[in-house]
Length: 345
Image 1 (cartoon, one colour):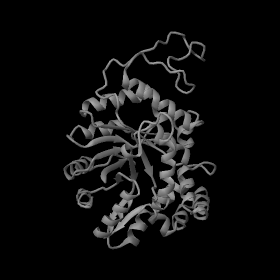
Image 2 (image 1 turned 90 degrees about the vertical axis):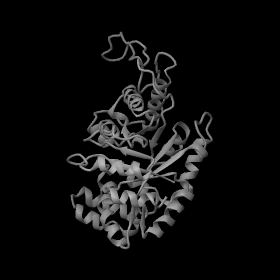
Image 3 (image 1 turned 135 degrees about the vertical axis):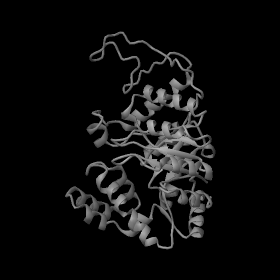
Image 4 (image 1 turned 90 degrees about the horizontal axis):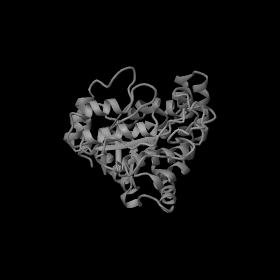
């Protein structure tokens, strides 16, 4: 089992002690550090800024949103950071959701599976640098078609000026549903799993197996990474830990998506919390956030946590590893916790 430090995206301002956290993670033997983006801070700027002070730890995005950059722009950022870090970059990608894609980026959300497949292929083509880039797909046509709206007809096929340090920078995909997870196993090098539940481990493995069995799949289960975002809390008071993370569970289930489409809510429905999801969502939409938080059952929070004494946490980590998770992405915010966690794997 490996550990990754998930710094996430910023709130109103930067993470003040991020350099200290990253230094502690690298010293303690963490495998990777990750940044995220929503509609505030981006992934690549803080990753490059803070990553400049590191020597060994891998530097990943979890996730960079597809709609934030054309695939060629993402590939430029990735090959640049990979050079500067000496080959330590992990490209983590995700589609986000319709509220962000259409509300923040002003782009259509439709066909997320097809867009992801095409996006990943363009990124891989840039990094391979085997010839001038062209893509006939409907989502990211390259060059821009001469008969398309606003076209001058002067677009030309290009290949990157800079030679990528690695043609196979690993690409991990954030995915939650069965079709997304299966496609991730088929076209990617790793899966960024959010709200991972041991109860659904067999189901996840079946989805992954479907992707690995497809013709042309890049990897097998043996060389594919599963990185699960999880709250790991060393404590004698599990009730306090549950209370601490109840608000974030309510936010993701009730506030991070629309009534018609919320991928996180759908995931918790698969875990068996349909009634709670309905109630939390209804309360959130009415602006009754405190009541929405109170409506989150303890076991719903506990479902996706690792918590307990050091010995209990160590035993739970072994269960997650046996279920197929190869990396725990933790959100520790103090150096001592990072050092404690490192002793448990």
